[in-house]
Length: 244
Image (cartoon, rainbow, N blue to C red; front, top):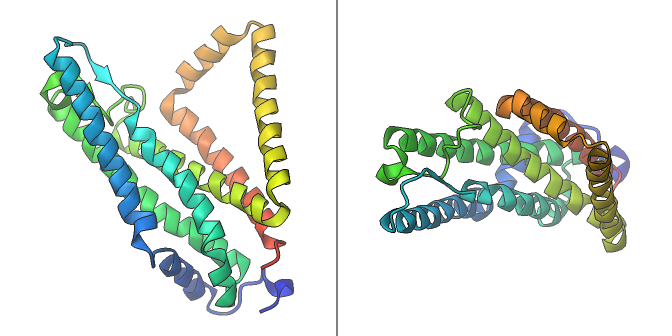
């Protein structure tokens, strides 16, 4: 199949998309075992720290950010899914659309597993009062304010968002090279600094804080879904014209 027809799905496209999912899961370490190892390792380390604090007399609720560790790894998975698997998909005459949709589906399967583990850990922490020493890894009040399903959705959306960002960065690198990728990252950094500066000059941080508190985790998750969709569309548009 030539590049001119790379964005056209032939008959049986759904089956071919499933082939991409299988291709991504050929090495189960990428989407299964390493994410599970990262999550489990962060959980063990967090509980050890909380137990040490409790043994030293710390009875207040103890929270950690260890549950976000798999999210950062999904950024890496997004990069790997593009740089390591895309050449194989082209050798198999898969279209870019099939490759992209299949890669997102593979990430969604893995993210769903991570979200389920996150929710189960949170339920255990609720039932045991933080494992008996008031220590929490997955259960964070503001994320769980709307219940376990909403907490799982938040974790799933964040996981997919990290994957899409990593995939897009890798796509920009493969198509335009290192210099353009660095310029894109610098532009994003400057834009974020500009937003922070504008809020600071307008002395609007209290209003921003009120908006974040009012939106809650579920409201912010809704915004995350929109951002993920926007980035996914941009990533595909970058991919579809990239040479094999």
